[in-house]
Length: 289
Image 1 (cartoon, rainbow, N blue to C red):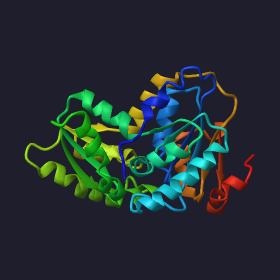
Image 2 (image 1 turned 120 degrees about the horizontal axis):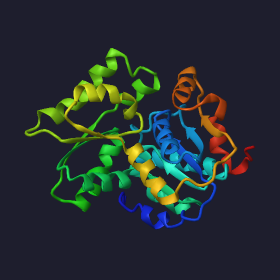
Image 3 (image 1 turned 90 degrees about the horizontal axis):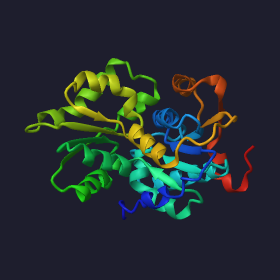
């Protein structure tokens, strides 16, 4: 499978004349809210339409075939909403499914990996740690993309399968989260000379930023959601302010999910709704109001 055929620059040129910016964002669960919040920060006039597949999270332990299937379904759902652009917030989907999504999408798509790789290369840091889900690590996409830009950069990757469930359960401040983060970052610390930069290569991991900062005070932490949002803003600008509310859809709207949305977005300015997995599967035959 070709993981590096993103083509995101070819889409960048299409945005300069967009006036109303309606950005669709999808993720395996609540983690993508960290990306949505950054996009709102850098493009405040944008309207956000978000879908999180909380009923089928995590994606990071799924096979590439299943990730492609799930990602395609959420993409089609967002297209029925009339979005002008789609951001694949999920790192696993960006690593595995982006080439397929490019072929079937009707609107431009941005993943979170390539903009972040460019940022890393320009930072001139030479020892990069990548913490990601098992499927993302197995794809090798981060090391391949970084090495393609600069072969001298050393890349150490580590899979962290259990951090996503911790965040989805709303346990970011629990002692279990601290123990797991310590377990996962230990290989980065023990290697000779260590790392100077750690990429939090999953949308859920920035929700654990206070824990990472406490344990890695001298390491530069990279949030790809922030990097991607800044890149997107430089390409499409701020557009005109929309009077429509931001929309957030989840395939399982639990109280924990609701609390995470409220953590990042004003409930008065947002529309929150559960959409059943069956509805997402049948999106091509449905009309969403």
